[in-house]
Length: 402
Image (tube, rainbow, N blue to C red; front, side, top):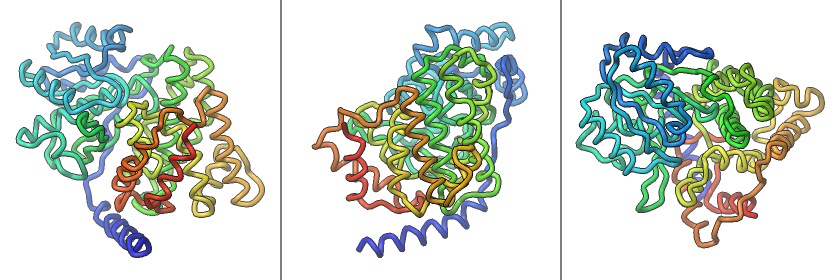
């Protein structure tokens, strides 16, 4: 039975690849330099937007980061709505709260400030705005919005999620604890602000985990056997190299503006790469941890990534060897030698930045639904180098348990 399923999944991916090449893919128009948040009014004027809904989280509000953007809006005499109650692993209820505030304030656009959580909340809310008769759950899945959303300006304050360039919004249903994605090309933001000044002083651990999130995006996209284009492969390579060169610098010195800006660019490129090529089994498992245990997505990806790469074995060696060469991890020896050295370096990076190798909170009784959810998310859509059945997912989950 598993042999037949694998054949079907590979056939699905091959056919989907043909269809995907006919879709209207695009990248956001972007500004990418320290201080470029000042261009937000120009983007609003360019799009004809007169009252954006600012969506952020309480921490960024307290730190004054969100206030930097609202001050720019005030100076430009642009009125706006304001919502600062998003949280890690946003829920359906949060999305509905933003929709309610957007309608009440009479807004016509979005400015999402923060990490993936704020952007995902705002994206899902934008989808609900244009599809008012559908619930968030009904919009979950692939190409279920299919209608242009209001002007969307993404302002990332971490270098990791890549949400400023992706088609996805990850939402958790609190009743079932199931974390799932809304995926539609219309959810790609219209504009992206890549301003390293917003990330200066970001706590080291958050810098580390969000950076490893970006690395996961780049590597998983690179390993996909189909969907990739020359551009997505190039972006994945460039992102991986930038992350290896800059992440630990940013981790060690939060005021290193050059490293911070390079990480912002790496995150964007990795986000574009996985938007076009897809992610894989790392994300399928990580989303279950976010839904059930509220585990930060970047942390989950960081821990799972090297374990899954080891499980792929020789199927991933050629591309991992190429990444080892590009990053300078290992440039001689066999493909297997270089691939294994690359995986070992990921473990080492995690260790140097205080990221654990496993989690001590995964409960035995949760593993069956984790494996079920991961399997359902990945198959048939993710074009991974090695397809996992539920038994393999359970085995991998066992390896990340403390």
